[in-house]
Length: 375
Image (cartoon, rainbow, N blue to C red; front, side, top):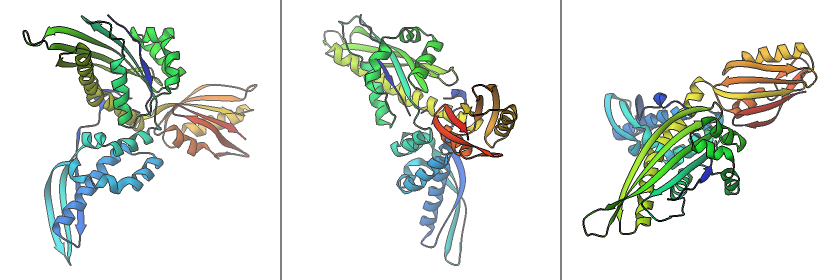
């Protein structure tokens, strides 16, 4: 039996409740017009349908700009995104063809598109992902490889996710929180994520078992892999969900068969659960407000404290504002916000905001935090 505690970090993604997931298909009604032909009018309507669907994922100013730049490349895939459509009405007037249709757009195909995924990840300010997977091999020699971690990091990198600097991995492995997190301690997993700047922590256990010959006297080994996985959002400490995915393969080499069965299980976990869970949780934050910590220094009077705290509370996109406290000696005001947007969007709203003779200057921001100084 072999156990390893591989960890890899990061994603610049994706934290919600899986019950609030975006539907796999979206039905939209759109119009298209063209002086060229009826067929071209239909194509223009289809492009509009895809643009609306992609817009589900786009909220920040940065992402709107990115989408505008890359839209033509995405729109060239229109036919691949639309699974079916129905013409609701059409007319031709003074040489202009106009077609109105109902189109069904595959959200899964848009998510699977690497370019669309990159746009989505950019809108999420490229959140980091930490992965802790314990591996166990039953009925096999000591494999001595962390196959599940390697495969998962490879798949996430291919989809455009950022991976943590590998120099940090060994530090994480030696920490007691790693062992606690792998044992199911959600609080320990959250602490690890916060300490290493990861917005999501994936904790899992992969078990591979040699279940004997696939066929009598064939010499082929049957290898079965089972991957259990949980996703924790570190800003809130929420357990977003858990799954079990299986894979099975047949090979003359137990090591090769183990690798194949693990790859199947990991592929299922990434494609059928992980990406959706992260992106859907981010969508939930945009809809209902993401938790952000706001630190403001330089507040030297109670009047300034009251003015600034009350003004921020009624700002656009601020859902809730909870005061952690203020101290005149230190001049620090700390607010826990729920904000419908990203930390960069909040920073843009705050930077240069005037309060009488004073104004705010943003001095730093991260995906879960904005730091300001009152000048």
